[in-house]
Length: 515
Image (cartoon, rainbow, N blue to C red; front, side):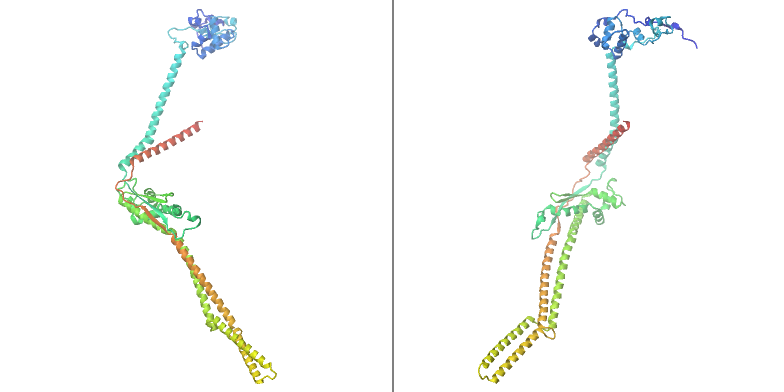
């Protein structure tokens, strides 16, 4: 391989490795002899670091980069001269550079690079001589232009996304509600569920809520749930053709119900068209029924109110029946026991052949008392007859015979009361008295059961609920729905919210992936 001819380069004045003083320092260098003036020149960081290295190369003790520039200029050395810069990158060693004067490397103790002969026709202007402030201003302006261009591009992309995902759907929704949607008529009604008032006010805490909405709150909520249930929808479809009404061709395709729609599809439409709300502070049930015609809307409202009345009756029917059934069963059982007690009493009376055992016992007791009195009289008379010296035997025997007869009669009467062959009168009397007391007791129980049944009847009547209409359903003469402006604004907010949520989610995921 051939070598490059050495004639294209010549060793520069700095080939000896010693920094040469500048031939003629510039007037600015002569003038700028203070650090403040050097600061005002706007030297770049690269130039200042170069000046420090040149000052260290020449053995100067400097305190800062600006002090290095000042000392170099005071020594007559231009730190930014090309020859001075080349000295900084010269290799250390004793070998002469190719094309350099022989022995130059040995004299300076280092190897200098060859200097290229400048060509006037191909040289470009040096950027080192440009004003740093102008360069910085140009760079800042270019950065600002890039930022503005990126900002315009991002705004254009943002507007495009908003147009596709927010504005276009909103315009479509507004066009549908304004020109396509079928007018709907809403019939409103209000009713309240009331409790029957009893003659006597309820005691305890229950009396505090009697007559208020708290007393019928559960019933109102139950009726509200029933009116919004599938059962009410099915009954309304069977009785008043709810499905057929919303399957008509006069209704737009979005709101129209299929001809063979299932109950689930019909119930979804029913939930949108029948709205029932409950106000616990006032106890009012508010119902709004929406249909494609005012007549159908009013018809559906009256039908649902009728279903609500039936439901109100069924809510307390079982409770009332249970209360009355218990009281009635207790009364019937007491009446049966009283009848059995009466039959037992009559049976005992018939078996003993005694109509009035108490009266008969009293009569026997009176007879015994009368006989005992006569016996006592005969005994006194007998004592008088025996008290004489010569008593009359015939009279004495007569008196004794009468006394014996009376005692025999008294004994028979007492035996009749206590030891009869068919049962003693005392035992029969006891049985009759027990039967009579049992009958009296059963009669008292029947009276108590009758009182309880009457109280249960009153309580059952108090449990009855009534549905009272506050606002009757009246057919409207203007379409209530659709509300084009409100629905369009609502659609815009919904689409904007969805877009915002998706954008935030995508940004978070992108940040998590790139971090």
